[in-house]
Amino acid sequence: MRKLAEWQLALPLALAFASIFLAPLLMLVGVSFFNDDKISQPGFGQWAKFLGDPFSYKVIADTMLLGLKTVCATIVIGYPLALIYLDASPRLQKVLIFIIVMPLLLSVVVRTFAWIVVLGREGVVNTILLQLGIISEPLRLLQTELGLVISLTQIEMPLMLLPLISVMSRLDPNLRDASSALGASRWRTLFKVIVPLSMPGLVAGCLLVFASSTTAFISQTVIGGVRLIYLPLLIWQQSLVVFNWPFAAVVSLTLLVSVLTVVSALSYLGRRTGGYVHG
Amino acid sequence: MFSRRHFLAGTTALGGASLLPSIAHAKGSVAAAIYPGTWEEAFRAIVAPALKKKDSVDLELQPLFAVDQVAKAKAARGAPPFDAFVLDPGPRITAIQDGLFDKIDIKKISNASKLPAGLVDEWGIGVNAQVVGIAYNPKKVPAPKGWKDLFTDPWVSRLGITGFQTTFGTVSLIEIAKVFGGSETNIEPALVELKKVLPKIAAVGQPAAMPGLFQQGQCDVIYTNTQTVATLKGRGVDIEFVKPETGAITFLTTLHIAKGAAEVENAYKYLDIVAGKEVQEALTKPPYNFIPVNKDVPLPDYLPMKNLDEMSNFVRHDWAKINPLRAGWIEKFNKEMAK
Image 1 (cartoon, helix red, strand yellow):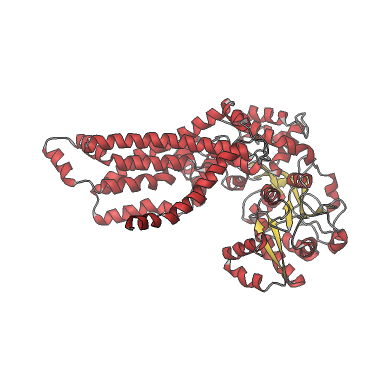
Image 2 (cartoon, rainbow over the protein chains, first blue to last red; image 1 turned 60 degrees about the vertical axis):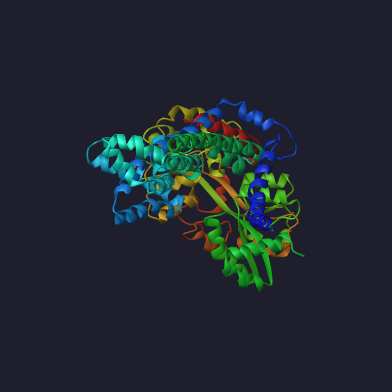
């Protein structure tokens, strides 16, 4: 009887999940199997068109690469920051957490437009470099992949840092002391003790940053421009401009499957390293 | 009966609690689709109070882009979620072909006589004109004469372009194609020329991002409409409009009554008030900067024409021919411009 009650408690959420997530997803799959934009002739035409076009593979690869580059950049900058947080006084930790969470409190549109001001031809970076005499012509940072990765790194950074910090602050400080007492250098302690133990947080951060940066339509189109074509731009064009919903559904499912593939690979990796540490 | 309309009215009221009392006490109402952004702001600030004052009709605005309006009306199959459309020429043709409009009885729109011939037909009325040409920053580059100039220095390295997603982008690219030997249905020459200068071009962006990129100095020459130029100028941006030597482009924004509309009479009142002198005059002023079409309203002096008759010489396009080709053009633009 008690068991049944618990099962019933989960029912509202399960129903909500089924109706607002699963049902539309199934509809999306259904719509993708129509040949025409009026959704009247069933068939595999749109899939054939998308998968038969080499351009599609380039867009998929570019989208996944953008995600991986952003993940790498957030690790390179985020991990040392997490280490600093670990050693900081409780007071400094509060300040750091505030700085880390702050970007999340701003709308992504505001953050994205702020990056136009920073990276633009007459933006902060170019003005400083020009005045210092380091460059004679403004650098092209906006509408390049480099500029996009730089801005996505800042925009997605909280998603890397928050899981990382939450895992790292649970590490037993005695382990580090033990490592150095046994003669390990700081670097050895870092790579043999801290990094393996923080792996679950790192993997969770990578998952979040990857999924979020590959689907960041606003940042991709506003900072990257339309010469850098990623899957979200194709979905937007097909659904809201051209109005070919079946084709948009095909591209959406492709994005979903590609992101899920990378995410599953990452979480498999996370489970394996987790097993290695605790096993 | 709990109809779609009541549901929509309910959800709109939930969205803005301030609307609730007015809907509850309305003598009548009309649901009108409106473009999000400037159009929505302007119609909320000017048209809604005017309609309430004159006819005691509440205007319920539903922010929707043109293609979304057509899609929603199509999906609703005869029970449209709004009574009136606002459309650009491309979606207008689609909607006519799909039978989404009611034919209008022009006698019910008294202000129709104030509109120039050609703005009124059996399907609806034109309430705003858009004039598209070249905008440049006079402090950075000299004034270009026409579309061809954009492909040479000093303009080309400061040029910002957009694709076929918008009406203004599509017609500008058609005009560029024409200068290089193309036509309304052959945009290939434009893409060929663009590809040649692509490494030099300052920005290839989303239409909505272009004003921001111009303001930040990322590009100093763009194709755009006079409304954007006037709005940016109002914010202190150095920007001037040029009518290309081959002619400025114009197209109309039109209002239509949806087939199966629930409030047909109120929809007529809405069309009439938007075409009226008072509303047109108010829409012309900053920060809205619309181009009025009512003959009694003087044109703002920043426009490349002194009166509406001059606009008959402007370049117009046949969207019945453009519509079927546009999806292919968008795809082609992606592939040609992709890095």
